[in-house]
Length: 337
Image (cartoon, helix red, strand yellow):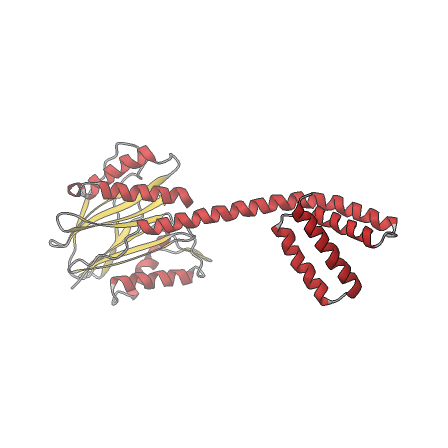
């Protein structure tokens, strides 16, 4: 036996004998403090039972044979319990280690997102991205190109956890490494598609919508890769229409072509880009309709783009009982009047 165990054995004899003599609250307090030392020194439950039995035998030499046998029986029970307890502790340690790793990955994810919202002339931009858990599968990005255009990307990584965070980092650095003159939406998606196809596991895919807003001509060119359709609001018609861009999901095949679309954005018009966590909001009655999203946006159109986004999120969060079931990302770009 080690010196630490022998010291604990002597200490246990002392506090047990004191308690048997006085039977007071102080003795129980000492017992609680001793249990902490047992844990610190990784003394197993069966060793505590054995320690208790040996102390009783020294203090009460005439202890009945039946009592001794009962402790032997308890000792066998505690051996099984001790093995199960050690396994449980090992699993808890592993869980804490995994949670720590997830915290690191979640913090890393935050560094991939833009640190601020761009403020181009005559364009009001609002964005909000909220993960359903620690790790998010949603991603958004802003790019300023050499022609003074604002590039906006919104993506959904089909997969969660640490793999999604690693995939997100690859997408960010792939986008940052592309030459500015190649940031036309269709070309950008084609380049990203090759990167994803070559570097991402076959069971992980990425949907994306990418657009380039020309702040001088007020045109919006965009392309999609299997992403959730957004909305376009026309101030003149006071109507929402679907903003869809057909295209294959990134990573399915190496050589994929993407169609490019264009909108002329009039004063007061705005573009809504989102992830499926917005349109597939699930309540007790089932999934909400897309019309519900446009209704919520319409209710707050008198506010700034960022305030619109915030209010829509809070309304949908309330509908879900403040329990997000999927990652939420919503972006609005409105041409100012």
